[in-house]
Length: 516
Image (cartoon, rainbow, N blue to C red; front, top):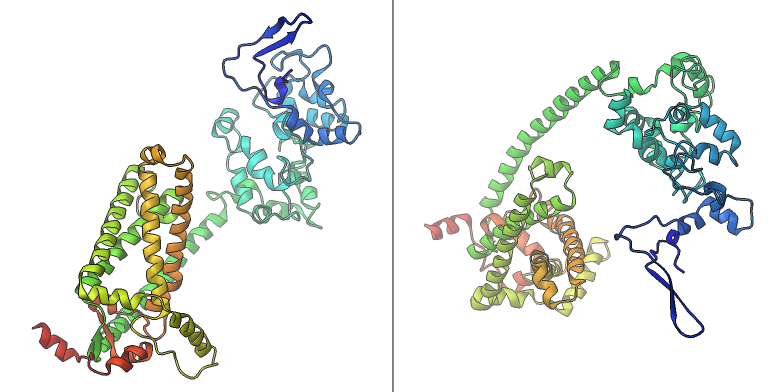
């Protein structure tokens, strides 16, 4: 026979008589309602584990009664909300007495159903030890998830006139910061307000009454006085109160003015230095590294890739500051349409690039030069040896070195992976019509992590070689005008220079004359 409390729902049970006839004992018809899964939770609880180990521990009848078991909604039931504390008190007598004297226990006794009783904090069947870090009553869960359940509920706060912000003020303190890091050295809610005998601050017997709070602080802070105790209170820690509010405002303005002034000062200097750097680069002889079609492709790729990254990550991180800054939080249709538009632009660019590689002489030459070769592995080793001081000369790279080839083919791979998985996510009903049903979730995983890989590679790899490399800092201008300074070309592409000599090098005057 199936057991309801194991999570199964009896539908029909039959016994077979000796003559072979079926004898139907009962038949339940349930309107597809899930009943609580009780037994597995109990067996994994502190009570269930104790019972399995042969120890004296609460079992079903200890709480529900034996022959007088009633529904929890019945006021005479042992597990009715108003009776739970006394039921638990059969074993936990001292704790039950403390709870009865607490503000929560007194509220429950008055019939206030919003007040917590034993199973609101400890759960009903899956009860953990307080030392269990996974339990509801563990120290790291108390402020946010246990006490915070009621003390951050706007309806409860307004209904009973309870001061708000107490959880927030605790979390925004040294105690809260340390608890969030998993520390067991600092006070949490129950260290100050007690565990079960939580009393009103107006109650002279309360641990946080004005006459007792210094002694409560002294549990951790030896020699604590009333003045020390006043240095931290929930009310004083709230952002809108206390002298510290004005100090905070002064510092926010000070930070804004000082750092803003520094940024403006350095920005003006950087503007002048960058203009001088670019002017110097333009005056140097150089080679035409990129032509117009290549620069346009790169520019479209730059815009579409950036747009895809921003609009894509805005879906997974909707509350991030940058998503709010660009106005994509809460505007899913706008975000989705922008993302798809950028995807179309990037895919069309990829198709155009493939056609350009095959249909133009420049494209076919670029493709041949970009093909990975065995010497790329050898030159990578030589390059590392050079930068570790083990080799005197830099490797003689040709048109494209191994770093550029690796990045290019990673881009090709990533573009088509993102296009295919994006198409599946765009049309999931079509995809699941002729592919396995797991394809959509797999596409989600691949799309997200491939995006992380791509963006991270651009920041770590691409930006280093075109922005942060000292030889090109503050930025290589090849992608803007297509020119590479002759000195940079000779140093970083010595193999190509050895083959072609000075013939490709053009002076700025010759370039200007050719354009006119």
